[in-house]
Length: 386
Image 1: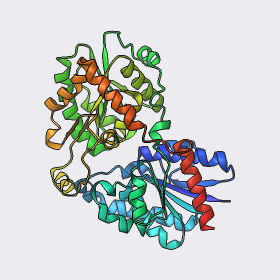
Image 2: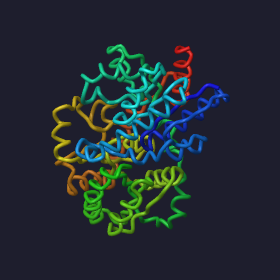
Image 3: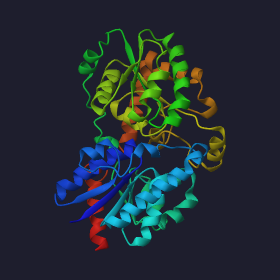
Image 4: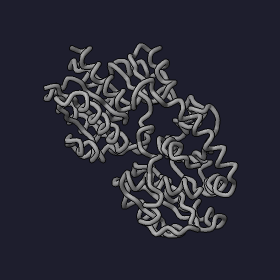
């Protein structure tokens, strides 16, 4: 039986892994799977070698205290792959973990496909040479990535961005309002501080202060927080004294229902930088992007970063569609001002939504859904290896 080993290091990778498994099974029901993931991959019948929540690390200073544990988990993953001898290893995002695993597996002669190109084009272009030594093919999500990796001699496939099949634009606003007794006069705003403990703990106090300021200018403002399991307790504690009893939700369907309710009522979003900005764009929700990291990490990143924008929406549109408030500019006052603007001015909201349409138009692969294109590329890698 053909065995595919999939290694995902965080919640977003778990979702990608689950969709990929489903798309692969649709083409080849005989396939077998193993790997590291979370609840979504488990739903597809692939239990995880260990709890992937241990890998929810970020930033240089945040990783250092756990470096020995991280090395042990890498060793466990490599040992499992070496024992099973899969026909292909698919590593998904989380390059700090997955590419270290890939590097140790590559000498075993197992083909390695990395799903979600590491953003070396953004901040460490020199590292692309090392990447060539770790993987056999990269599945890219963004249209400008293939030329960068092809120039370095790495086979690459543009599969389109999975946000396009996320369902972020297909929620039920009425169901959400009924479930949470949301009044007609209330203005829900989506708040997404991140799915990693370190980033959430850093952003939640700032977000809370920003919402208190915004609530003074926007009557009926009601925060809605989609909560990742790994940060659920942290979010509940931090949001307990926020204005207007924040609504905490769990699960993909509830999150998309919340998006629909926010979009329908002319709401907005306050989110950390990342893929969530694309989710907001798909859902048609004007938003502000925020981020703050350890001062040492920020100083290092500033020396390395090579792109003009943090938001993927802005990168795709090649202009600032979405306001970005990063590091020293990530203050309650600055966030509140950017959040309130589309809530009070329909023209500001309309301009953002027009920019969303422009940006998202670049994310579609030539054929099929992203997960389907990724499945085809993985099967091709197996055939090429044989």
